[in-house]
Length: 232
Image (cartoon, rainbow, N blue to C red; front, side, top):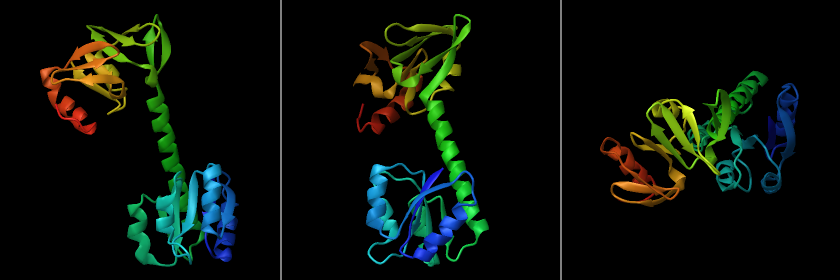
């Protein structure tokens, strides 16, 4: 897990450097006393975690973090406990009150690693699924799915250049798919919301095919429209 630290106090950075050196899975890439230099580094490099002081001479760490284009996970470090609520309001992984001991630092790092593992597992789960085709498991990238059609005990997954058939129910496949990326709008159809070409009150057009909206799925359809800033 790659990290950097930004703090106007060199002694604070020395402590973080020493603590980080004890943790095998944590790699402290750089430390900065100047927030602008830290921002520039983050624009050109990747980091999983940022240790960030809040009370700095030229800028508040909370405001600094909000201005970052690429936001790594953040653990705020400060001597002022009154910033704790503000820290968590920007989705901080943890908040370390100076002076903090190694055990408390380690706890924050473990929280960051657990959250990173969760994010990675979510991305992997959303990226692809496996379905049985011709007595073997076939990997399907979700971004390539144009439409999913239920045919009794079979499912036709529309892909380019040609669709595939798999022996399973639409309900069981629906449970494997992320929402709202995939929406079931009919007892026989699941559609990728970003592949919808046009909307109507009772139908949508996906991959050149008009799909009816089932009456029992109308509430889901209404929510889909509102999420796209549309009204039926």
